[in-house]
Image 1 (cartoon, rainbow, N blue to C red):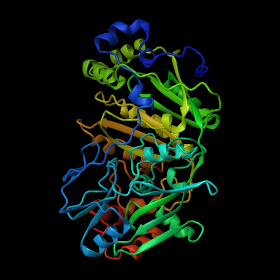
Image 2: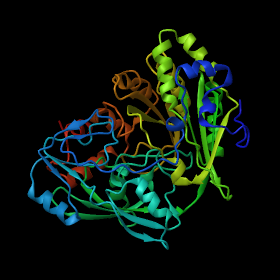
Image 3: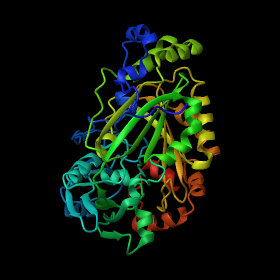
Image 4: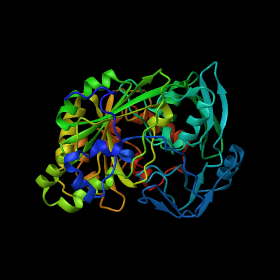
Length: 474
């Protein structure tokens, strides 16, 4: 089945999921919407930095009570801090990584007070911003100057430094991850020395620094390429899963942004495409009345032991002819708020193997009756950063989620073997257990990065338990 044209049967988000024949069922389940699940919208905003002494990540899975929590207000204060302390020291961003990149019992450093635009150069089409600035705040600041990021991740509350350091990405077959647009950065080594990294002066050092997991030093400011501000037109539709999988390569090639969400135990997926819109008729997504995630969970709770009945009930509730449209600024549509907290694993597959891998992952996912969270499938263009999951290969990403208050270990136990069999590389900020033995085989420039890391941090001050496993320094 091909998706309907954007103008056909545009509807509310509740109607998008809920067909007339099944209204009684979904009313009983307190029917919801796709609003926060698959429809990034106008409510995207930057969360205020936390000031609590005890640190935890967004999902609550990773926690730490550091002996020293520092919030320097300048690069000079950061230098003084690093020179005046000994032992382990780690940066903390917005807490949107699920792996244990941040936790330390020693010194934790937040750059939340370094969160401003430093310079906008319209001639060079670059912006320089401090490392603690949130992506959403940066996007809004750029918009006031008629500029935009080339692409954005689907969550915009990450700090700029944290996002590039973990390879955070959006979707688009011809669009690379955010770090590929970095042309310069300032980095403070653990001994307090400031290093200016420039792509045009030392491309190898930039290739190491673009994705570094915070293991080379503290990024204090970043210079990123930008583009003229642009509007996007969004089209969302529901389609039988097998059909959408078959059409995915064509859709990714035809549209600036394309992704889809597998709705487990329903036989359906939600496709989302965005293309540049040059018209004047702007329209934000209509707010939904409730979150469809709650409906999928209720179906799980009520009918989880009866998978055939559960699938039948979901299919009765879905009207595949319904669509949704929106037209607005790129940053208003590409990023979203995620009010429902979860844990996540995400792997990046060579594009030629991704759809085969996806079918295996969906089969494994639907072998578990407790699953209700949608699976996300995206496209990312290759780049040259040494520790980028997209290093030298065009990729698709597959992300599997579990509610924050439910078991999550199966995200690794069940799916990592499938992903690894298809040459997958894990997202650095998403759950995985790989160590140096496996990772060194997945990254051709691994040894080169390790040499730079040891040169910048010879004492290993920037390594916590997780990074000692990653880099083989246990």
